[in-house]
Image (cartoon, rainbow, N blue to C red):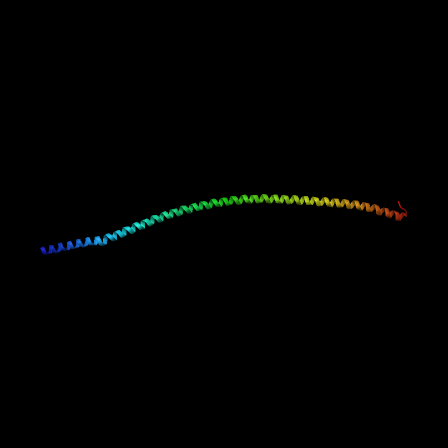
Length: 141
C-alpha cells in the first residue's frame, strides 16, 4: 500500500509541478495576450466611438452651415431679383417716356409740316386762281 501511496503521491507532485510549469509558461502568457488583445479591442472600440461622435458632430455642423448658406443665398437671390425688377421697371418707364417724347415730337413735326403744306397750298391756290382769272378775263389785277 505504501508503494501505491508513493506512486499516487509521486503522480500528484508530478501533476502539480506540471500545472505550475504550464501555468508559468503557457497559461499566464496566453491570458496576458488575451487580456492585451481585449484591452486593444476595447480601446479601438472607444476610439471608433469617439471618431464616430466627432464625425456626427462635424456632419451636423456642416449641415447647419449649408442650411445657413442656402438661406443667405436665397435672401441674396431675392434681393437681386427685386433690384433687377426695379431696374427693369425703371428702364421700361424710361423707354416708354422716350417713346412718348419721340411720338410727341413726330406728331408736332407732322402737324407743323401739315400746317406749312396747307399754307403753301393756300399760297399756290391764290397764285393759281389769280393766273386763271387773268387768262379767263384777259387782264391783270
